Amino acid sequence: MASSCAPRPGALQVLVFESSPAAKGALRVRGRVEQGTLRPGERCLLTPGSAPCVVEVLRMAASRNVVPLEEAKSGQNVELQLSGGPFPDWPAVGGASTVGWCGSVLGSAQSPVEVSDSVKAYLEVLELPRPMTAGFKAVLHVHAATVDAEIDQILDATDWATGVTTERPKIVKAGQRLTVLLKFSRQVPVCSVSDAQSSRLGLLMLRLEETTVAVGHVLEVR
Image 1 (cartoon, rainbow, N blue to C red):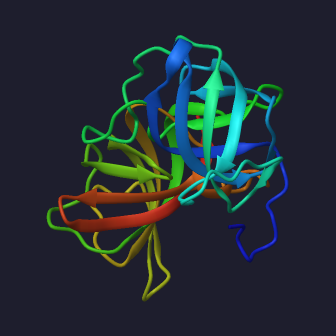
Image 2: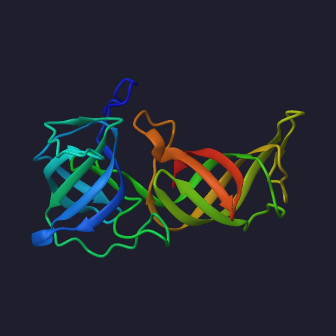
């Protein structure tokens, strides 16, 4: 079913949650239209990897009956069959526990989704099991992708309580807002939140095991 919220305009973005091979080199995909409108016959790119494909089948996801769709808008969960393969065995950006193209994004061939392994980001530090300095490593969650990340540089830190900003601090603590440079272990689809077409591709969460260390968003794709 469609979201009750107004559809998000802009270039197509479909977040990929699951994928599996189909006959004749096709790929079955389950995901959600995050932005734009998707129609059967549309030519797309699956990123990372910029794999060209065509939407051959479009139907409603999680339905007991097969419900073909003439179009799907933002907020709708969908099942797709993509032709254009064979598709490579792309390392899943959803994390080690996922397979196939989980964590990838299907975008318009005319406006492909940007991918990167480095961003400038704003983070709010919530809880720190150990000190955070440059070189701090954690697991990053961004849309359906999960990737190892490292804080390459801490550009500034602002204390929530006092509003005092420290330039290039050597160490930071919980209760501070940071501007940092993040490096990822591999490329993931990502956008700046200042971009009108960013959607969830710019929202970040850093975790250490069961602890959510920080949340924030992408300021700049590098």
